[in-house]
Length: 444
Image (cartoon, rainbow, N blue to C red):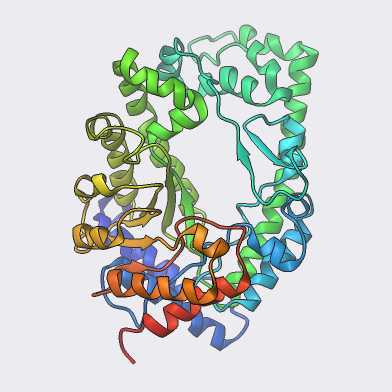
């Protein structure tokens, strides 16, 4: 009798997801050569994740929004013209022989932000110069220090009636809604606020934004489909993060959460535990909708320079580890991007099942990372953004060679940048590709 999904081990679930990733059921490739190339590329990543030696070191380009400028347009144009967005990313994919195409899904739809008056970002033409190449996050204390109890008691209600009115100007009237209390058999209190014209306008803004978002989703989905049928396995399948970052980035801000570690640590810890299951669900639901089992997880506030070792092991790592294990137990492969330095964290973060994770490092000592994690986890990174922005192709290629020689021994290494980069050149990105293909071969 075939086992139910819930009865499978995490390894068995992962094999099922790897099989789906490799076989790409339902995909009609443009030709047999594209199908063969797809399977070779997917196999290369799967073997590397398993800490085995593939044919060569795989890579993904940290191209960020660079495809827009390579095509001759701007980030602003691609945020508002989805056809332009897809043409730019298609042009980039056709001109670079990559192991995976990262897709256009991280170029967000400007009209959606405009319609709800979104306040957490500045973007080209909205707070930033039209020619700007990236976004700028606007951090703040959108959640007050005395609001932890509401968050802990009912996170969804807190998000709808407290946070959304503060981070989206058009949705401010949602603060007038009453709690959706299932214990009330007579729904008069629930219904009454919808008579307000401003509440009606808020929901109209949500509907309008949703319709615009659907246009963007259709366009980017088609762009992703074209990448797959051309022979490029998708890499990013889901998105998640550390619970500490979710509260520190979006709700309390850096200043607020640092004070909370001293002034109300128990409330903070309780809130972190409360949102952990939702953080896992976010990753799983996103990955379930794609072929790729990889879950991207940028880590913002766990670096050596941000908090002490004691604080990391008390506030950051316990719930992050639960999220990682929760994702792993669903057969997915979390890929935390350890921003800045994680040199002092390496002996802590190795406490995970073997070959279950990809640790992507920005500035961490890669020789030390290979030494500590090489038998436990696949590692990726860390070609410096500064080098890709200002270095010569030969300097980039030489740096990649050293990384491959240091980290690629025995498998378990993916060549990529320290983070995404917009201010680079086609020549420097091609130097990364050349390095992987020239220096990363395991067998001929």
